[in-house]
Image 1 (tube, helix red, strand yellow):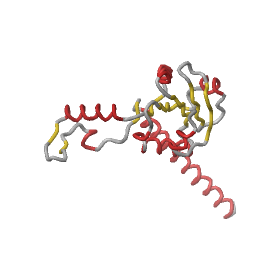
Image 2 (cartoon, one colour):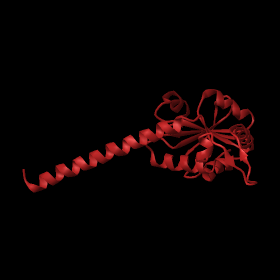
Image 3 (cartoon, helix red, strand yellow):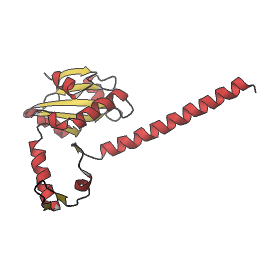
Length: 179
């Protein structure tokens, strides 16, 4: 075997190994993302562990008080970003529902997902964005004619298509397309 062939084989092995590592990291992230039904801003480490937290007045709150505050915060959140479930389409009776057909392996999907998560408190009242796993919901994709990931579909409470678009890179872009 000559030197060029050896270098070619080594390069292929390095590329394949890197691809396997990248895919395994993305699948771990996708599993972790799907563990929450309603997606909210990240909690502080102490809050997530259920530990007491000091307030601005210097007093320490217990876990029950923090849970009550989280509930109040959830009610103050205007809209929501949630994992898709068919019964959630009924939220369109009170507002707008947008299905975000997202694939964990799609770079532009990850970008929009991250922007929505960062700005979840900026989702207006009455707007619900439902995170639909592109690879799992084949019948839903067929119903709305979704042929590629990063497609957004606005629906009414009966699941009828109102609008369909793709390529929104940010939450504000997504919101500007709602009819």
